[in-house]
Length: 186
Image 1 (tube, rainbow, N blue to C red):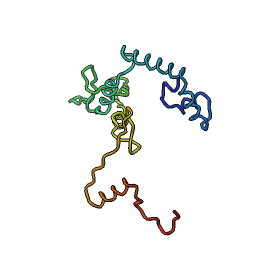
Image 2 (image 1 turned 90 degrees about the vertical axis):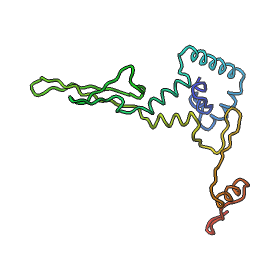
Image 3 (image 1 turned 180 degrees about the horizontal axis):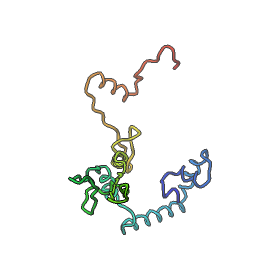
Image 4 (image 1 turned 45 degrees about the vertical axis):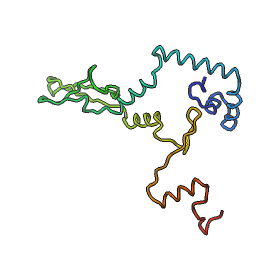
């Protein structure tokens, strides 16, 4: 079940109680089992069935929600007039998914009269939303080449000057590009 949630065999084995040291080997053996593969296929089908009935957000819906969060600005929800400023949020409000919290407080003057409602709005972090969108779109990677759907994607470099072109050619050919410092070994 943990593997179905996270997709990481080693983490699933650790959650199941195996040590960090043995988790990778246990995960490989377990995931090779036909019974485990059958159960994972069942769970995947159940998730797809739930997604088709709206129980799980589709990728497009997640992208739209994250885009709303990334685009949200406090000025989308505030209005200012002659009598002060106020928050105006309704069904037509743009990027309303960006709203994390609205807190209102009523303050009175010294006599307990003339109530004033003070509203504060907090938005979700747009940088986190942009980061997640970038990860979903594969904008940046940790490795130089990546495998997606059994296709190896190799980075393309754009080199602007002759010195760097030569250096890049040496790297691709496997040639040692830096001389060892005299005080280092190897």
